[in-house]
Amino acid sequence: MSGWGRTAPSAAELVRPSSPEQVQALLETARSSAHAVVARGLGRSYGDAAQSAGGTVVDTTALCGVLDSDLTSGWARVGAGTSLDALMRSLVPKGWWVPVTPGTRHVTVGGAIAADIHGKNHHRDGSWCEHVSSIVLATPSGTVEVSPERDPELFWATSGGMGLTGIVLEATVRLTAIETSYVLVDTERATDLEDCMARMTARDHEYRYSVAWIDCLARGRKLGRAVLTRADHARQGDLPDRGARASRSHSAGRRGSNPLHFEPKVLFDIPFTPPGGLLNPLTVAAFNEAWFRRAPRSRQGQRTTLSSYFHPLDALGSWNRLYGPRGFVQYQFVVPFGAEAALRRVLERLSEKRVASFLAVLKRFGEADPGPMSFPSAGWTLALDMPAGSYGLGSLLDELDSVVVDAGGRVYLAKDSRLRPELLAAMYPRLEEWRAVRARVDPEGVLVSDLARRVGLVEQQGVSRKAVSRRRPRARKVVGAR
Image (tube, rainbow, N blue to C red; front, side, top):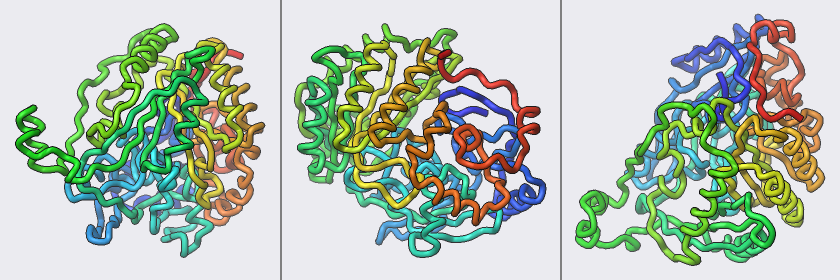
């Protein structure tokens, strides 16, 4: 198994329980046999968070479906293996939207909790777990229901805890009411990084959703030039009447008859992995130039479907194959407000090294939630996708880690595949607080992932080092030689 970045695969036994009772029995057996276990949803963590070399990986996708709901007050109790895609397809036609979504619909509710996912609305609505009322959690010590009021320490340790405090079985989530399956998008171009940040600082509070695409290969006065898009949910009165819409296209006429129509599709599936990959400095530079020029200097109120605005890459199936057989690394970090010089330094180094990042996305975070291992905190977050194996990438990312740490920031563990363990405590200063809660529910250290071993989140318990090395195939290098 590997993550979405397709780097550092490892071997483990994969099991797919069909009931909460089977999950709990599996954990009890693992506890008695000192066998490492970790949960896995749809495998969209970019690195090795849902792998456990030499242990057992629990596929939770059979624990799915809406178990209960109240669509008058706006909440749903769902199985942890339910994908956001399935949840949206069920809820949007009924006038409800998920409170937070990342850049893909293909993550599970359990994974959303483990990574405490964030989206374009963090500055307004916070992260996923701030909208969770309760969690049913299978731990090696037993199954418990936790909430911000009932065992808040375990609830918040689980939020962003990367699946290392238990296996989520179900969760109750508060929803967002909507009138249509569209958003109204305002778009504008920013000439450089400072211009982009100034625009976001001045007006992000006026919008529910905000994100900026950054040209990380631009240099000089164009460094950090950006296309900024901000949006709010469209109301029924924002849509044209059915007749006007039908006169433009037959498909639009069908949607016009139902303002909550929601049926996102995969337009094209990448059928194979190109031997050398298709994304390199030349192709990415050409794409960046075309994308920036194509964007309007300023456009107000463009009507766009939910899927087009929130999940554009989902229309391209298996898009991770574009990076070639060596895969790719996603590097996402946050630095606090006031540390904008660190953000600029990161972009300067990326531009100087000509690192090809097809995806470079800047957002503003609001205040952090109480989770000691939750990634979002007030400040600027930048996410970058880079081909693995690029020459010198390892040393460059180590350098950027130092810039981030010195600025008081951190990297996102759900996307990490190469962080040095000595930096973990500096990035997550409440690490020991989290470890204490984990030790309470998993004293034998059963819940272990490749990520946890690699960055030192947990002590090397459960499966012995000898067993891991015996059963794990050699992993491909994630980044270039130093």
